[in-house]
Each structure stands twice: as structure tokens, then as C-alpha cells.
Amino acid sequence: MNVIAPNKCMLEIDELSKVYPTPKGPYVVLEGLNLKIQEGEFISIIGHSGCGKSTLLSMVAGLNPITKGTIDLNGKKIKRPGPDRGVVFQSPSLFPWMTALENVLLGVKQVFPHGSKKEKADIAKYYLARVGLADAFHKKASDLSQGMQQRVGIARAFALKPKILLLDEPFGMLDSLTRNELQQVLLEVWNNEKITAIMVTHDVDEAIFLSDRVIMMTSGPYAKIGDELAIHLDRPRQKLAVMDHPDYYDLRAHLINFLEH
Image (cartoon, rainbow, N blue to C red; front, side, top):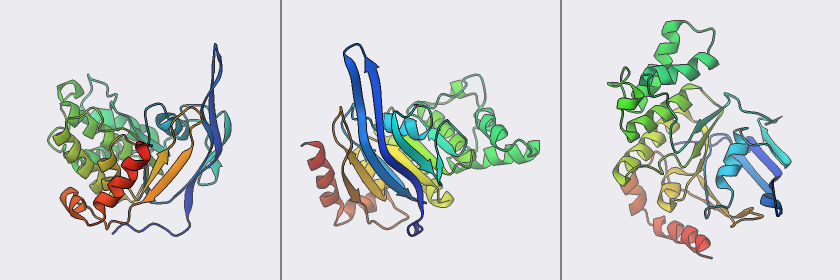
């Protein structure tokens, strides 16, 4: 069972705002958003399109400048991207002419520059094997299915040994069968690594299955946190067992009710 360290705040978002200038004046995407995330937590963020979920995630990643407020990771303000944050996007953005192993090694070489060639290869191979790609080390990314490419993306993020994992609708482009498979893969690797994770998703069932807490965003502009829901389901989790749990449909109804109002 995954244990969250009591009161150990890893990520603190304080009065965060994001404003874009437009010809019609400033467009306020997020305003005065506050959130604390504990070490080892898996958080999902849901809300309607345009509410700033991905904007928030990109600011935590350091890919989008902050207009007002602060984001602190282990007490240090985030100002730019860094290897302490692993990111998995909807599209894994692999180099198509490189093999699965070479794509993962790119990040490993950056984070472990003093490791031997074998040590770096072993790290990359370990995480590729963890996501079910032990037989595909030397296949070019262009020869992999979309689901397999996303597995490489997940392996690459974990191989960086980040402090926090950021997932921006990582399964949004996949068919439902592949999506279910990769949710389970992600959960198993995450549970083994005990890493803090934040995921943006539109999928209510996905949020319940994966998360310790679901953060609900109000519709934009001026989006902020409207509600949050703790998911007290034992870990490790299996999809069918979660759906059979007596609390499952109450949790689901809570999230859907928020999204419909």
C-alpha cells in the first residue's frame, strides 16, 4: 500500500495567476490559484476545456512563465524547466529515426552524465522493461504503434528519476483498450517508484482509478480550484476491483455533478 509522508509538502502553488495579452485586453486564464501536494501523492486535475489545466501543468514544468504568484518545489521556486520534473505529453514526441532505447538514453545521459555507458544503458533498459518493452529496445520509434510510443514516453520520464512526474492527458489519443493497459502500467511503475505525480485528464474514471486526490477546476477565464475529492481506495489497485468498490459510483457522481454545474 502506498503511504504518503504525513505533512511533507513537496509542491506548493501560492496565489498563482496566468494572464495572456490579447488585442482586446488581458485574458486571465488562472487567478489566485492555491494548491499543496504532498510527497508521494498522485493528483489528478479535471475540468472543462479551456479552464487552464494544461497551462497550470506547463507552469509547474517551467515551460510557461508565471504572471503572478509562486510555485515552490521542495522549497525552491520554479523558474525554468529541469530534470527534477519528468513530463509525459499526450504525444510522446520521440525522435522517429532513433530506437526506443536511444530515445530514453537521451534523457538518461543528461541526468547521469558521469555514469558509465553500461550504467546508462541499464537504467534505460530497466524502465523500458517496466513498461512492457523488453523486446523492443532496438526498434525505431517510427516502427512502434502509438501505444508503444507512449510507453517509451513513460519510460523516458521515469528514467530521469524526477522528483515529480507531470502527465498531460497521456492517454488521450489512445483507443480504450490500450488506454486501460497503460493506466495499469503507469500505476504499477508509479507504485514501485513512490514518486509524486500530477496528471491532467478529462476522464473521470481515469482520475478515480489513478489518484489519491482529484482537483476540480472552475471554468475559465479566471479559473481556480472549485472543489477537491479524496480517493480513499486501497493500493495497489486493479481496474475491475476499483469499479466494484461500494464507494466508486458515489465518487464518480461527485465529479460528474461538479462538471455539469
